[in-house]
Picture 1: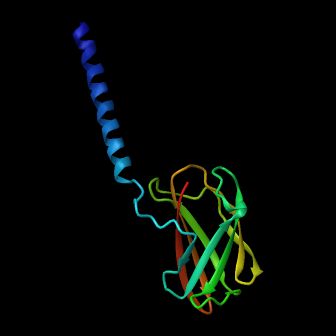
Picture 2 (picture 1 turned 45 degrees about the horizontal axis):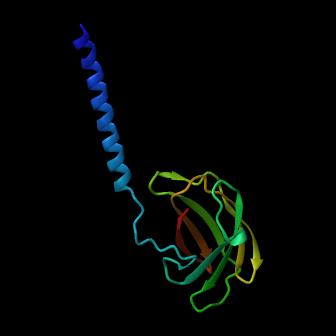
Picture 3 (picture 1 turned 30 degrees about the vertical axis):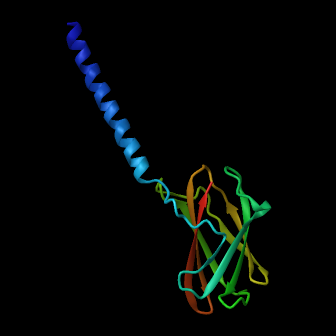
Length: 147
């Protein structure tokens, strides 16, 4: 009778061990690329604009709501003041988006825009994408963050 009780425990232990091995393998396969471009200035995907972001206080605080200042200019360096900018982001390794809905709340002039509602609720690899409409054309730029 004692041997029959041990059999289910061994099966459960084997299943648990297998699940741990699988979880470890999945996590390793989703590791952030080692060559991520972490620069705060990037050229848009279409190549017409350059965007720079600066977090409030120049640092990104995990778990804290904060603002960013964006600077948008043409590739030639002319400030762009009439853009409409949308914000989207998330964690590629975890498959979820930002915990908030950040948005550009106003143009500050000189190609600068205020983004409010930025928040990152955990450490890891995040991406933030800005989709913009300017001069009748759509473009986007994605920034990588390692927090």
